[in-house]
Structure formats: C-alpha cells, structure tokens
Length: 252
Ligand SMILES: [Zn+2]
Image 1 (cartoon, helix red, strand yellow):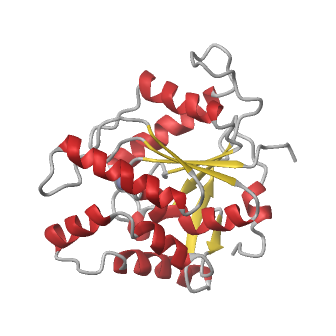
Image 2 (cartoon, rainbow, N blue to C red; image 1 turned 60 degrees about the horizontal axis):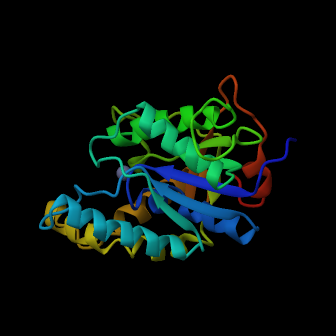
C-alpha cells in the first residue's frame, strides 16, 4: 500500500451536494482522524426564488461554510457559475491548486454518469486535476503533490444515471446509520434550499427525499442508511483500497 495523506477533499458542483452525497461517510472518516476539506465549484447563485444571483451566492457560501464547520472542515468555493460549469483550463488549474494546497490524499467527486450536467462537468474537471496534481509544469503557486491522490465518485441523487436508468454496482457501500443525523444537521444549514424546494415542488420536508434516497441505497446494502462509492480504477490511477480498509466495519 502506498502512503496517502489523511486529508479528504470533497469537490462537488453546488453547496449542499457534498452534504447530500457523502457527508455520512465523511463524518466516519473524521472520527478516524482524517482531515476533511469541502469545496464547491460554484456558490449556487441560481438556486433562488427572490434574491439575485450575487445575493444568493453570498447566502449559499455562508450556508456551506456553516455546514462544513460540523466536521471542522475548511470550505472553499472555486467561483465557477452555477448552471454553467465547463471543463476548461481555468477550472482544472483551480482544482489542481486546491489539491496541492490542502495536500489531499483522497479526492471525492460526482459520478461521470450523474444526472446533472454541472455534476458531470465537475467530475471531468476533478478527474483531470487529480492526475495533473503531480506534474510540475501545471501552473499553480503550490508545488506539485508528492503522489496522485486516490479518487472516488459519490452517489447520484435518486440512484439513477443520466438517462434515469439504474446505476452500475458501486465499488462498495458505507453503512452511515450511525452518522445519518449528523448528515441531516449539515443539510439543515441550507435554509435557502428548503425555501426553494417548497416554492418549486411544494416540498415541506426538505430532508424527506434525502432520507428516502439513503434508505433506498441502504436497502440494497442491507442496512438502514447507506452511501455508495465508485473508486476510480482507470489506467493511471492508484487502486489502493484505503477508504474501504479504513471503514471496513461499515463497508457493505
Ligand atoms: Zn448539485
């Protein structure tokens, strides 16, 4: 097994994505001595019914920062535009710079076949940035990473792919029954999204969908609540099962 720094960097598209798709697992890793860093590609400026994009971005950066505090996690926003995330040089350099800055040993991001186009673009950016992190010619203020981080993909909402079909089996599930309430606490900081869901879909219980999502995955895994992970095992990436071994008592 290679040695990876015990810092997990979760990079997702919008504020509340990390909380929704992997916070139960991050809480378990935090309790096992890992440092957690949360980043969003965008400040989520479009998720509003009354505020303008700039006002909404300010509100949601703050909600994300407060949610991250529950895990003593640093929070970064990479300031791409909500709804318009593209894989380009600037975005890749920003993610590479952050991987180097926080000395990430493990990176979490969306699935390549996620339902949301911002999520898929984020996945493409993060995958490329992870590989680029060790190359000295990539122009960042920070020196290159000593070793390419391990890369894992997190679950899509609804557990279906881009076209609404069932997703292929994950590398493993994590039983998050013990940390599910902490995940809900983190999500509860996203007040603005509770208002949006009520306005758009008449949803009074913002957390009901998340409960049902993690329950559905839990049923497949044979536990109450679970999160699913796909380790990125493509050519050029390390395949050490670090998260699987660290969480072996919770792995299904
Ligand atoms: Zn999102």
